[in-house]
Length: 206
Image (cartoon, rainbow, N blue to C red; front, side):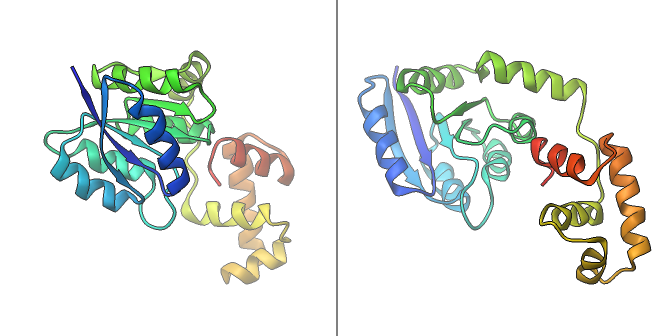
């Protein structure tokens, strides 16, 4: 039985490479290609692919996680398999929570991608053992919830900005910045600016 596939990646070279790999599999049929999440939704609604092989970062517009959420809301809904270079815990967990059937890294062998597509079409979850353990750990220990303003402070902190520079950029007082930092440190379980930046980057908060 042939599995129909829609490719979604904002890099034409990557799509060409994937098409070459997947065309060699007799059980797979590429029915379309999209460079953006919006284009993917339009094509999926008309082509009804069994599986959408989707990158996580899609340039301007909606990203892979948002695209996954929207694709899974279609009727019929295709299985979505994320294929990307990004392997941060927050992104993996976010994709699975959005309804993705699995998450693979582009460094895997072509046979793994082909097998992953077939398994996704069959309703299986497709995750490498190490990624699966990280997802399970993330579900057991959810990421801390930071406010939008705390995220803003963290992003500026990561650029090397001082409290005074952060205050100026956000149009608040330095005392307010210090208050935000106290809350950030507490939520992340850290005791320094450098550790806060490290944890935020590792978990995908920034």
